[in-house]
Image 1 (tube, rainbow, N blue to C red):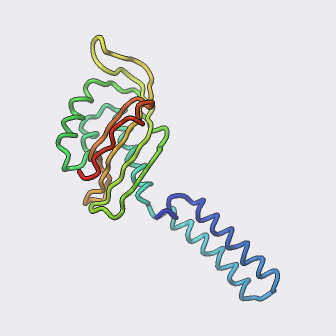
Image 2 (cartoon, rainbow, N blue to C red; image 1 turned 135 degrees about the vertical axis):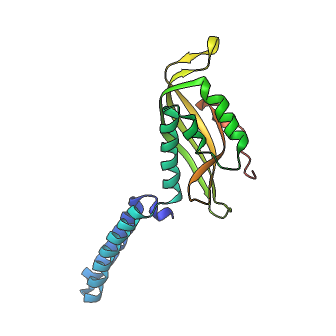
Image 3 (cartoon, rainbow, N blue to C red; image 1 turned 30 degrees about the horizontal axis):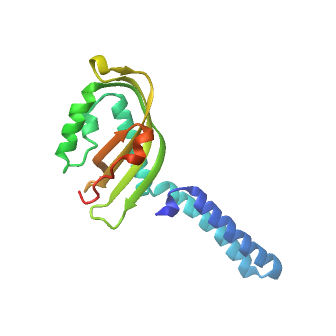
Length: 188
């Protein structure tokens, strides 16, 4: 599926093949190589169209992250909980207890550092690490903080039976602490 993660791979492969076949055709003048050159062009266009139609796991995960960020920014606990895997009641409780302490005015994914999909797992799973930019009011009383900030997030995700990627576990911390964060339990 790496081929469908970005059109750049398809374009580069098409160019490299086209150059080789074009040089061979120019050197030999054989019409079969001209047909092969046309075939490379047509195949490249077909693959670019397929790249737009096929949604890879990474692309589906990125779309899910964007949805989660929108729901967090809207402070919609019910919709955020809808992004949690069915087998994670403790995570649902964690989200329900944390979210009331925050009043988000902004939440957006700024940089995805890692998306490791385990296609051999059943169900398919992934570990995703990324940064989010947030703004709003965080905490309560004396511990209340207002204004923008950046958080590092690590999600353990699973693709459920309906084909949607959902959160099995999560951690968040200031970006400078992510290197010291404990890894998520992959056997969960």
